[in-house]
Length: 307
Ligand SMILES: Cc1cc2nc3c(=O)[nH]c(=O)nc-3n(C[C@H](O)[C@H](O)[C@H](O)COP(=O)(O)OP(=O)(O)OC[C@H]3O[C@@H](n4cnc5c(N)ncnc54)[C@H](O)[C@@H]3O)c2cc1C
View: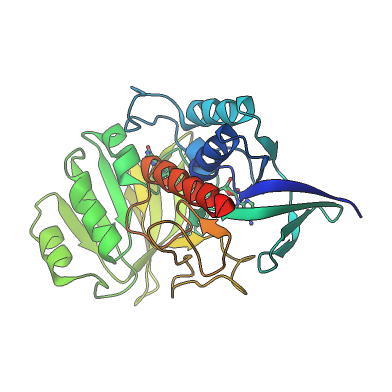
């Protein structure tokens, strides 16, 4: 089967992948972005992005459309909503097969496959995603100004995000499945001393309730098995994050959370393979940080091709 050769292939068309595509194509490199989901990645989950510099407020979908058009105008090819059926990152010429029938090769590859927040697995979770269920306090906190919300989780993210949400909300109930937190002492102390925050421990949300938006949840006590109902305006879930590294893990070095390891130039353990965005090991996951990673990965790839 014939393979079409590119200078660079980017896996993922989220903020990181599209930014990398813009830089690569603008440097006159023949560039292809291959995306397994829909273009924009997690950006399209956000109905109003208010913290992307230069854009006062726009939906994530609008921002991703502009990024996509920009990449295309510079000459970047995009294959979206496809399935990667084979991947060879270790050969000098990198190879991707999509949908069992099309093969592309490239001299460099950028991995920008992002990630997804871990879900609770409670009933109606998909129905209310973005309609009262959020995975990002930084992004959505101010939409809940003056409201009562729930934060799910007992790690650092859950407790730190609960404290940060107190800037906006009237009250927060932290629901955690165990009787102790898996967070640093400082994070626990800050949450416990905040008068807006109360706790329901040893409990899990089993169901989301509501018509258009979340209006309440059913909680099950893990010790007694008893169910109870709690009214709420929104639920923020912080029970972990899953990087999209399934197809990479055999060859790319990952940390214990299965995030891709890299140096500050986005270089992975394999020559000619760079990484960008939420899929890599880092602390802050935002559109701005994904764009920054994508830029650095593309510039590193360009330098690698010139060396
Ligand atoms: C609900 C929500 C709201 C948010 N709101 C904001 C906000 O207001 N402001 C802000 O700055 N940040 C916000 N964030 C965070 C921000 O969206 C992310 O940090 C950023 O978009 C990550 O971009 P990325 O390109 O690294 O990854 P992603 O957006 O995850 O994109 C990765 C892309 O790669 C595709 N893919 C996955 N596996 C493969 C594969 N094997 N091969 C090819 N493609 C693959 C995926 O389908 C996806 O399209 C929010 C996040 C969420 C979940």
